[in-house]
Amino acid sequence: MSGAIQDVIQKDLHEQVEHLINVGVALSSEKDTTKLLEQILLAAQDLTHADGGTIYSVTENNELKFETLVNHTLDMYMGGSSGKTIPFPVIPLTVENKPNLNALVAFAANKDIVVNIPDAYQPFDGFDMTAAREMDKKIGYRTQSVLTIPMKNHEGRLNGVLQLINAQRKNPDGSLSVIPFSPEIQRLVVSLASQAAVALTNRQLIDDMQTLFQSFTKLIAKAIDEKSPYTGGHCRRVPEITMLLAKAVNENTKGPLAEFALSEADMYELNIAAWLHDCGKVGTPEYVMDKATKLETIADRIHLVEARFEIYRRDLQLEYQDKQIEAAKAGAMDRVNVLQSELNQKIEKLESDFAFLKKANIGGEFMTPEDQARVEEIAKRAELNINGRIQPLLTDDEVSNLKIARGTLNDEERRIINKHIEITIEMLEALPFPRHLKNVPEYAGGHHEKMDGTGYPRKLTREQMSVPARMMAIADIFEALTATDRPYKPAKTLSQCLKILGFMKKDNHIDPDLFDIFVDYKVYELFAQQFLSPEQIDEIDVNNIPGYLPPEKRF
Image (cartoon, rainbow, N blue to C red; front, top):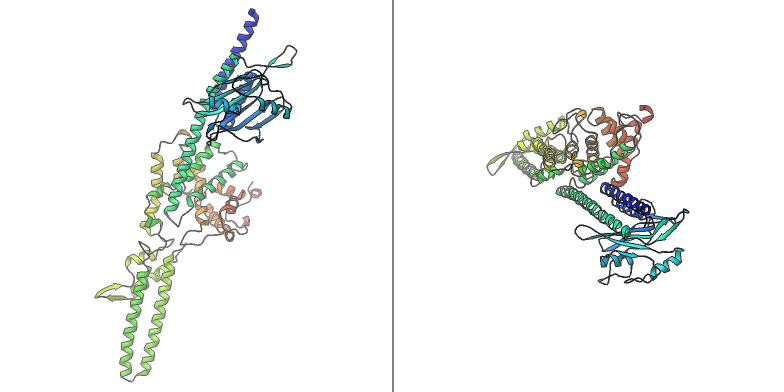
């Protein structure tokens, strides 16, 4: 062999090795498994000048799945990032609990050998290529050289198979000739397959860990939702709203947030934070989370109040019965009638008062000062003698709880439930989040903050909060307003929710720019279609939303 030819061969091998190194670097940085497999195939084809090739992944059912298929002569490109689905079925690695040796790729995988066939139409030791020849007849192709390489990771586990068809050499006249895969080329492709198997294993490990972590966060959220029948689904719905808003922000091209965008990694981080935003509720006592009425502790104490009212009614009836008997004995029948009228009025008042207390016990979004004063007045009206013990009609604790202005929680219980966000932050800050998830505690911990600094737990202002954290604040409020499982309030319609959020924007409680995008892109409608009942989805006139102007009036 002349020195000139040797120099050409050496140069070609040098370029191939250089290419192999560059491919290895590229493979290690690819984050998408489908694209990674596609890159492996395309790199192998480029390295060997192969006309066609296919790469397979291994499924959980021990099957070889077509991932990417390329054939230049047939102008065929399917799978991978092509957008075209590969119509071929998976190839089982075992048939009836025995290794499948009928398909070449399964044969190579099961035998754990590299199969290098110079000519598919010539006899090959160990495998029958009749099926390949029959396929050629159907598609008008000539399969000649074939190189099939099992891809095994460092643990010796099969995670793919690479198959190349018809290595090519460029002739002096520019035409291409099909040639066998040389031993040198085979070693390079085996080396590439080895690198690829490691890269693929690393990617799969990362994907598996990511899937595990996502599943774990959703498991925590589900456990919290299951903890209380009155907030069931909250931890699941807040991420939905958050991500819908985040997507809308990415699509937005106008206003103060026109230049703001979340990358795919940012969106993943925000999604994790949304699922974990209430994880601190694992430390909230059930009796507080499940307090459906103002007087509920282990049981609803309204029944004790009702019993006292019944005792008081009995005492009134006995008292007036004695008075009526005395009047009758004295022959004062008119007095008997007057006493009966007085008794009827008092019992009617008693029944009215209890009906009022029973309604007040349910809780609501606002209790007027007049109604609170009525609770105190009822408590002072009478005392009962029960077994020689003087008891009030309402205890001080019952009065305090029945006067709760919003919801069913008193001040101490409100402090307990508000502490869930502090526990959330403590729990999340204690976790060693990797760099790409380092903002999860901040995002999750800010959903009860207000833009004017009056929120909790840290009283952060708008400037002190990230945009994603501000997104979560809107999502949390909107979910609470639309929720159908709160015992102290009916679920609100969309128009009512947007009206409340509009006032919150004007009061500087929520981010004004994010709220505008929330309305501009009808995030509320997208969420409603999936999660709200038909009765809640009413007609929306954006001109009636407080503090909101349509884009054509803002810009």
